[in-house]
Length: 423
Image (cartoon, rainbow, N blue to C red; front, side, top):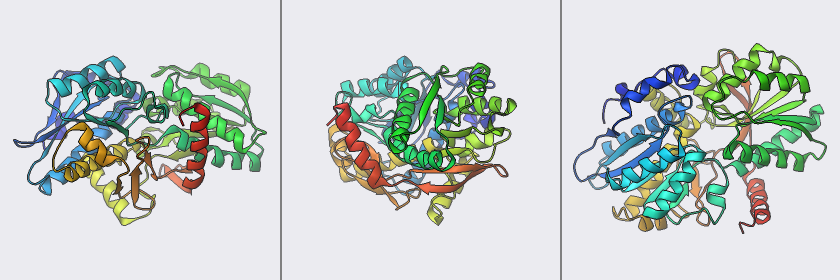
């Protein structure tokens, strides 16, 4: 494997966008984790520069770890995998362009798309045309796989999905809203597909489980908003009982720190986040207030198993920080790919691999029951950890996890698909 030190960056700088242009000098050519001849090349479009580069950095670290394990164990009958990483610069157009180049110019036979939602939809159209296997690892927008008009025969999602988190989150939040009489809600989420989709679904299920909840206002800062002051002061003026946010990465770090300056979390407003519980995100915040609520992203202590702790420590030894949500999702995608290759006898044809992945169940160290499944009918991941917990300050982390009920999640998801016309 190529030495990763050439790509080393300070994680706080990555998250906050400090020196974001520093990585651009390395973008001109694809970064390749080298293997030997007769390899299987896997292309990875992802965000490796700018304010949310932690998404791509942590995804790449997970793939390097997974590839090293696979190649070190002899690969596929002696054949190794070779990872080719390209920076999309958080641009959907660039994501589409580099994906096409990875296949047509860099001879990649498989795509692991570690893009955010906006880029993932662009990548989806490219792989639909090219017919290669693609596994999206970081897009949580439900429509990517739920909508039959968008779904592709050779594309899958190995990531948590908005509708799943919304059901679990709505139920969790409703119990708090009823117990503590927190019925006046606001939201502050990024103004693009994921932010609006995620927030609408969370509020829908919150109100389903507690019909006394009222959404009094919604704020939509743009993606990579440089200053959240106007949004924080707007929230303070409205004085909601609770606030939900789908902000993520460096945007979430900036929002929490600016909210701390204005004392937003010192009053009676409870905060619910769709992304806070990522270890590098928590470690990037100067002072994490205790008692903030977040859906599970990743936690070395949850599930509390030796396999999960070993995964976390091995990843940290290589990357310098604990895994993110994007890391475990991308690591899992690699496992699906290599198992499909094994079952297909090394055939990298997109349809051949897709037929193997449909319905596949694999062992992973961070699933609460030890296994996750790629659902056959809509090509999306299920049975991954869905839980909500609260922050603790010293040291910064999560505690009091409440596991989501997958039987309830799947029942509500089916009804939601029917309402959307997806079934």
